[in-house]
Length: 233
Image (tube, rainbow, N blue to C red):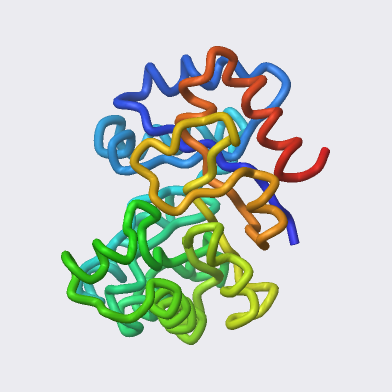
């Protein structure tokens, strides 16, 4: 199974994004387009990044009634992204509808993964804000199993939970893990974090890294450091 580092391009617009990626003269890293950039630049930013040779994870976290998500996924499928996601809390029915909408007439489709719990959520927030009183790992595993049973390819989870997800759902079930920081980086607003090396050891398949790379003095060097620590090369 391929493993990779995904850079979270959480920029306000297209110009800033392309200027940032111009610094990568030797690599064409996997990039994540989140809501801020997609809503600012529109679908054309996907085509521009794909034309440059970047694999794209479109991180819009869909969550709506099944029919709406199905129709939206059909639109996103035409953008030729590599990974797209939704919230597992939208129910198994929603995830099944999303998969149906994402699948093209020829049977091909991007990878579809489900967000379990955001890495900014801790046990206190889970109970106080969401009124969910099960341990956070139990909740993540339940959502992961729902995603697998719906036919999805994997989940977004904390690297702290990646190994357990593989135990519960199988080694081929993908774990895409944000909340990754260098040992000498700030945690920022992330609560459940891990270093790239520890994320690899824990079983993460893809790690999503934003500010430790995008706000580095030398982003390309920070990316190469992350690749070395995560992939061991």
